[in-house]
Length: 388
Image (cartoon, rainbow, N blue to C red):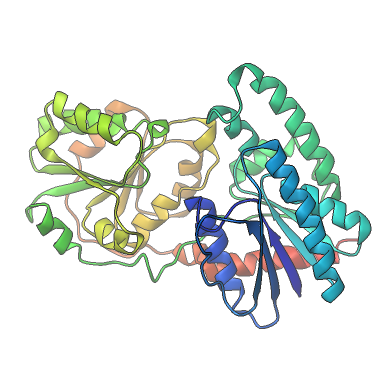
C-alpha cells in the first residue's frame, strides 16, 4: 500500500503536532508492505530520521497565513502528481487544517482512483479564534466561512478520523459524513519511554522527604491553561495538611506570574518550579510524583482534545487528578486511576483526602500504544480503499 501523509506543519517547530507526526510515521515505517511519502512544511532545523520506508518532502509554507496555506496546498498537489508518476498512490492521509485536503482534492480530481482520509485532531477553526490567531471581531464571519469551505472540500473525502468522540460529535452537524467510513483514533504513547520508574533522584534534588506527598503538573506553563487554579487550590489544601508539595515541571508565558502568585499567597516554599526539562528526563520527573495534575479549563481549545498528559502519568504508574471537562470524562470511563474534580472546592477536598500509595501499572493502556494506533489507522485506510 502506498500512502501519502500530509500536514502543513514542520516536524520540529510545533511540539504536539510534530511529536504525533514523527511518532506515527516512525512506527508505520517498520511495516514492510507500506510505502510512505510524508509531506510537511519546512522547519528551521533538520528533521528527525523517520525510517527507510519514508520519503520526506518539505514545502516552504506558513501554517498561520492564508498565503502560506495556499502555498502548501498548491505544492502538495504538485508533489502528489510527481509521486503518482513513480507509482500509484492508494491513500492520501490529510491532517488538519484543510490546506492538506485542498491540495489532495485538486490531485484527486486528476487521479480519481486515490482515496482521501481527513484526520481531524482538534476543532481547529474555533481554536484559531480562541487562541487569537483570528481577530475576535471577525471571528463569527471566519467560522462560518471556514466551516463552509471545509465542508465543500470534504465532499472529496472517503474516510474520516477524529481524535475523540466529543470531536466527532462536534463535527457531525458541520460535515456531512454521509455514511463514509470513520474512526475515533486517539493520540498514541510510547509505553517504553513513559514507564514506571523510581524518581528518587528528582525527589532528592529538590529536598523532598520520603513521607511527603508530591502533586505535580508536567507540561506547557501557558496562561491559556489557567494554572493559577492549581496554586490557589494547593494553598488551601496545604493549610489543612502539611505533608504535601506541589511541583510544576515545564516552561511558558505564565511561569513568572505563577511564581509570584505562590509567593504572594504564602505557599512559595512548598511549590517547586523546575523550568524546562529535557523530553528524555520527563518520565523520571513524573515518577517522582504521587499524583499527576491535569488541569484544563472548559474552553473550546481543550474541551475535545485528547489528554496525552493523563496517559503519560498513568503509564508511569502515577494516579491522576483532572478537571472534569469532556475530554477527561471520556478517558476516565476507559481507564482506572483518574479522579475528576468539578470546581476549586472539590479540587481542594480531593487533595486533602489523598493517601500515599505505592505506584502500580494501569491496565488498558495498550490500546493507546503507537502499535495499536497504527493498526487502527491502517484499518480505516483499507475501508476507505474499498469504498465505491
